[in-house]
Length: 397
Ligand code: GLU
Image (cartoon, rainbow, N blue to C red; front, side):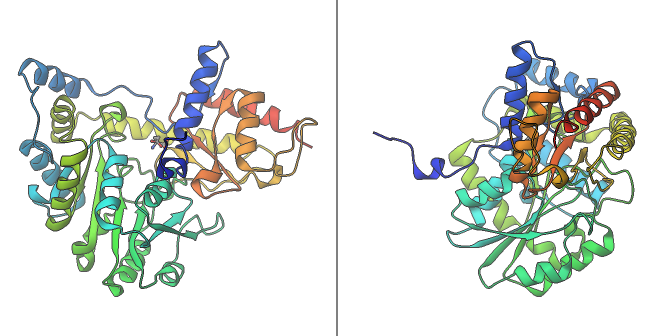
C-alpha cells in the first residue's frame, strides 16, 4: 500500500539541501570534503543579536506570539523598509515567517490557483519551481543567457505573459547567478508589470546587502506597481542568521491578511526568541554587514580569478550575493573512462567523488550547462577547492 500523496511524490527534493546533506555524510565518514554547496554566510551571528535572544529567554518570551509577528518586529521591518529601501509599509502590511523560503510559499499559496501561470526567470533559486507546482500552478520559465549576464529583457518577459499569468518571481541580487539588475533594467521590468494589471510580482531581495558593484533597487520603489508588488526579505543573509529562520514580506494589506490566515493554520507565529533577535538585528548596525560584504567581495575576486584559469569554464563576474555559476558545457559528453558526464548534475557528483568538492548541479536551477558554487567560505578553502576541481577536470576526455 502506498500511503504517500501524489503531491509529495511529484515534488523534487531541494537540490541545495540534498547536496549539503551528501557532503555532510561524507565528512562524517572522515572524507575531507570542501563544501561550496549551501549558500550561507560562514560568519557567526553578531553578538548584539545573540544578547537580544538571551534577554528574550530571560524575559519569558515563551508564549505564542501574534501570527504575523510581534508588533515591535513588524515596526522594525517597516522602519528598515523606509530607511534602506525608501518604501512605505505599515505593520498591517508585514508578515513574519519561518525564513524567506516560507515567505515565498506563503505568497504562492495565497495567490496561485491550480492552472495559473507563474513566470520564473532562469537560472532561478531551486525552490521556486517546486513551490509553484505544489500550489497547482504552472511554472513558465523565461530563459536568460550567460552572454546576456543572465538577465531577462522586458521583451522576453512580456512575451511570456498570458491571460493566465498570475505572478512573476523576481530575484536581484540573484541566487544562483549573482547578477544585480540596474535601476534602468528594473524599470523596464516594472513597466511590463505595469502594463499587465492582472499580474503580481514577488521581489525576493534577501541578498540586498551583498552588492559589490552598483546598487540594490527595490521593485516596490516603482510606485506605479507598488500595489501589485510583494517585497520579500529575511535576516538570514544580511545578519548571518540562516538558522534562526526569520523571513518577512511587505505587501498590500489584502495579501498580508491572507498570508496571516494561511500561517494561522500552518505554523502560527514564528519562534519568539528568533523574532526578538531579528528585531534587534534590524534596529542597529554594528558594522558586521559591511565587514561580511567586504569579505565576500574579496572571495568573489579570488574565486573568479582562479576559475578563469580552469580550462573550459566560462563565468560572468557576479556583482552580488555569494554565488558564481560557471558554464561547464565544455565537459558534457566527456568521460573519465568510467563514467560519462551527461549533465551538470553528473559533473557536480563527479567533482564530489573525485575532487571532494561539493557544488550544486545547475539542472535544479534551470541552468543545465552550469554548476553553482557558493564562495561563502574561507580563502584557503576556495584556493584548495579550485585546485582540486582543476585537477579532476583534467581527467575528463
Ligand atoms: N538559499 C540557500 C541556498 O540556495 C539555502 C539553501 C536552500 O534553502 O536552498 O543554498
